[in-house]
Length: 94
Image 1 (cartoon, rainbow, N blue to C red):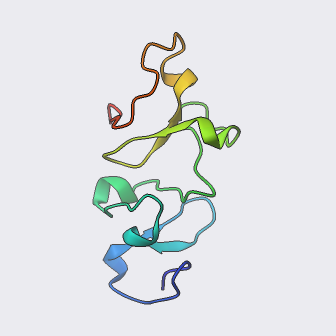
Image 2 (cartoon, rainbow, N blue to C red):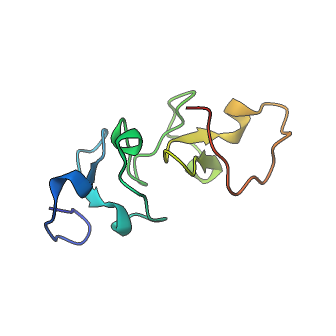
């Protein structure tokens, strides 16, 4: 069952947070996430999301999430010179 809405459903449509172990429907996430195989691999919920580069949980407000796989990175970890400031629809290289 989904730990946010408490409803059941197809287990294939639930995302498992690799840090806290909670399950979520993609539509219960903010923003909504499509639970593809690529997204499910190593997925972290909003409360647990860490930078995939430095693995730190610090500065969650500075995390940039990939529009394809929902993995997150600190902007300063992927772009130390700050040339990609403000990218809203960013996709990582994975």
